[in-house]
Image (tube, rainbow, N blue to C red; front, side, top):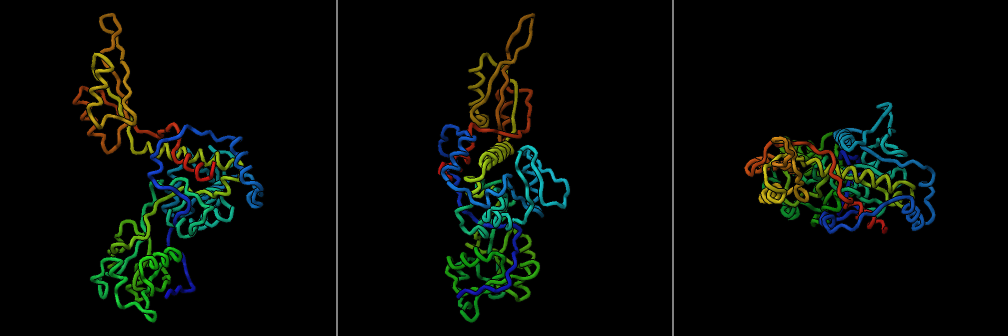
Length: 395
C-alpha cells in the first residue's frame, strides 16, 4: 500500500538521477583518433534528425541554465571562472547573463529543478545541477544526457534516516526496517521527503510495501521528534545535522550519491545550430581544468653526463613518472670560456598529495633548485567524454 499526501513541497536544494550516461570505466578505454566538430558535422546532425522541433527553431541563441541561489550557485560560478568562463551579469537581480568567451550563449539563472524541467521542455539547451535533481525530475528521460558526471563539487547523498531511540533503537539496516511488524496498511511507515519519485521507488525495491510519504514545513530533521513522521529521506553531506537531531543513517539506506553534473538536451544537441560546438568547448575546458586541479608542475635541475643517465635516475622513482614521462632538456652555461651542459632540467607533473614525497625523491637522486607551479589546464589529445557523447548521439 502506497500513500502520497496531496501537498508535496520540494525539500532538496537540487535535483535528480540519470538518464543517459555511461560508466566511469568506459572513459578509460583506448581513445579513437580526434574528432573535429564543425559546420559539416552540424549539417550531418540536422540531416539525421530531419525537421526541427518548432520550439527549438524559434530562437537562435543557446541557453545555459545555472543554479540561481545557494552554495551550488556560488560553486558553479567559481568553477566556470576557473575555466576562464566568467559569467557577466549586468544587474544581479536579472536572471539572464552572458559568458563573453562564448558567443551566442545565454546564461539563465533558475532553480535546479526548473533547469531539468526546461531542458525537457526545450527552453534550455545545457545546464548544471546536482545528480540527485536530474534523477528526481528527469525520471529517466532519454532526452537528457549527462555530458560530465563528476564536476567535483556539491557532494552529498540521498539517504534514509531514522531516530536513534524508541522502536528504532536496534534497527541498523534497511532490511531490519522492512522486517519490523509495526508497518501495516492501517499504520504505514511515515516518511517525510521532498523526493516523491525516488522515495517510493527506493522503498518498493527494498520490500517495504506499507509506506506513506509527506513533507513537513521547515527542516525535515525535526519531523520525527514532532511526531509528523517515523523517518526522513533527505540529502546528507556530513551527517552532523542528523546527529544533532538524534537521527541515524542505516545500512543500505543510501538511495544515491550526488554531485554537480553537466547536463544537456539531446534534441538541442542534435537540432540546434552551434549547440554541439558550444558543448564541446565547455566540456573541454571543464575536463582540462579538473584534470589540472590536482596536479603541480615540478621543475628541477640535475647534474648528469647525458639525458639517458638522468632519465634513468628519475624513472627509478615511481612518483616521478609524470603523466607520460619526464621531460629532460640540457641546461647550458659558460665555463672557462666554453658552453657546456653539466646539468639537465627535469619537468614533470606530480599529484598534489604526492608533492612532498616527490620533492624528497628528486633531491635524493641529485635534484636541486626545485620549482613548483600550479596548473590551470591539462588538455589531452582529445576529450574522452566528448567521444562518448558523440557515440551517445549516434554520430
